[in-house]
Length: 95
Image (cartoon, rainbow, N blue to C red; front, side, top):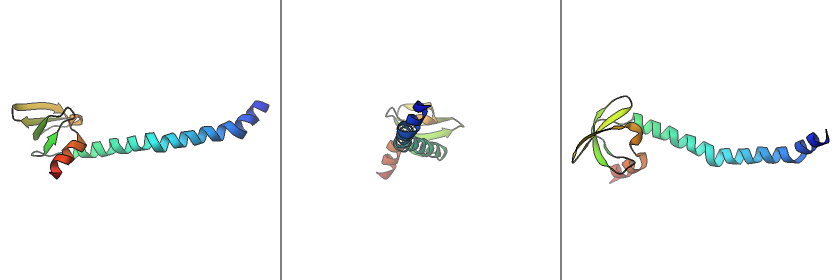
């Protein structure tokens, strides 16, 4: 009984505070970033200039539900939509 009172008195609020801090500094930003990436992937259209996460530059030639065909200087490549970098493609559009 005494251990439960000690847990409720000092350790439990500290544990809850640590969870809240971890949520706001790690989990929430990651969820927001994932949501932004999904929105970016769904907004792609034929003709968009993009950069993949591996650094390939190209232009969207065809779109499917989960894949995209990218036209590069050396030919066409079929890739997953998730392989396109949101940040690097946005920087390319700003140029």
